[in-house]
Image (tube, rainbow, N blue to C red):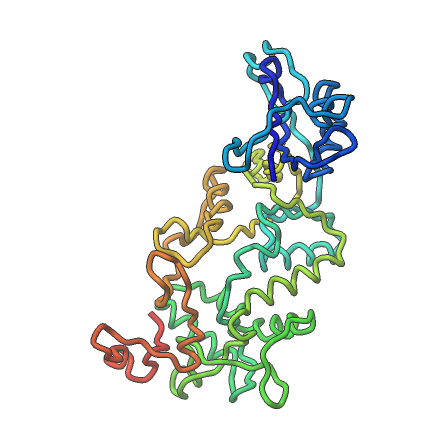
Length: 382
């Protein structure tokens, strides 16, 4: 196989349009060149001038006038320039950017589990809603969650949401917001049943109930009844199933998604948030989203740390926008430090491993957690 170099002439080096093409030297009716990507050729035909088209298809007499190299010696990049522009235009910087305006009742920034559920909840209530996300929704970091969702369903033994609340408050060293914890633990069983009704494929017990595994910090009867089994899971890929379930549900609602749009800042007027300004990552255009309500569901900021199990996209964009707008952030010091992961690489070793019987050992092969938590052992909370 031989390759042909297609390059712009000197006059068109300053052109604003360059096309990357690769050719196979085979017989072709229009000049001996068969493009690998015919769509690219049609694009060049649309944008190109007569000279460019002649370069693409050879001369009218059927023989190519372009030099040919072997695959081992030709340059790696092939560019086709279509036309040139006034060189004086490159010396003048733009004084402003056009801004594309959008108006909604509500704007949700982020399309993970929280963002998707908020979005179609708003649409259900009749609000015109937009979702801005820098990733395709199913690539949001919810997809990486492994262990499960705590809820006092009582499928493995008798359980009570008040015991769940006690464990959560105790696990926070009594620093947690007890009103929020009260609401979360009381509503958790309803949320799990809602997800099941959406089609989330929870792991099951032999009698068909949602399987619940043991997790750290769980107990029965306010810490006096032994280990609880409270964590609802989908094997070791709970987040993956959760996100795909919610995304599938979201598609049946009339919600507008702006995928690969990076939210830059909150639009503030008189101390009130009036929406969001965002950058389209595809073409660099600036978009202004005016909204009566703005919901930030932008995830955490784990990548502020060197060793972290979060994806490189978890950069705290929403937290930063709030800070730049002069609004308060609360409890930034409360970051979850997971006890098991691969240092440096950032690979998570899910708590479910210990919930299913795994245990921690030190360099001498000793189960050291028995010294610090004789009852909970490897499932002790920090």
